[in-house]
Image (tube, rainbow, N blue to C red):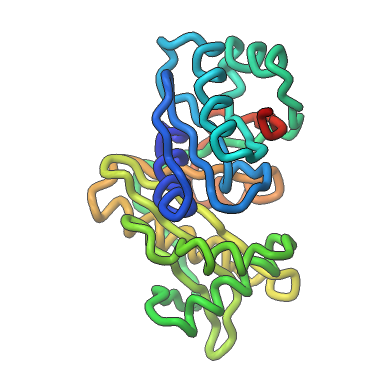
Length: 246
């Protein structure tokens, strides 16, 4: 569920100017930027009936064609894939990323306004707030240069109070499931409810548009925010980083 929406989202954003390859057991998405990042260059296992080693071989072959390091996402309960990834030389990130889900509209009383990103000025504002919120230099450039704002099925939104932009978030629909991504609030604006407001707005929009449920990958710090909105933890993800194949 969550990994399928995540795979589709990455393919719809950085995968469009990059390369998307279907492999046995899942898919590999390679961007034009050679960095190991789960939202930029990654493999996603979506068919558990295919042996994990076969899936990993397919992902490795895909990235050998572009010469980029990459990340493989694994559900924490997928022991076969976790073991195979270590055997294949993947470096494990021991940080568990909670996978959360909501199937009902969210109720939230807030004076924060949400606006959809529709023009170049809003795109620039979103990119800047997102980079500041995550503290990742170059993230604003990535979102703009890879054409992420033009991804089909994606809704980009900014939370604001009066004339002050506070935070951002993105909603994505793959047709049956919705996903929430890039929820970010710069340090100076935290504690005002921007993350909760933009997540609620995006979640309700996805459900109203026909999604049966909405998923997201939370941080441990962000988990309480989503729990208060009605999201429940359905599991967690682990990531393994692989060097560029020779």
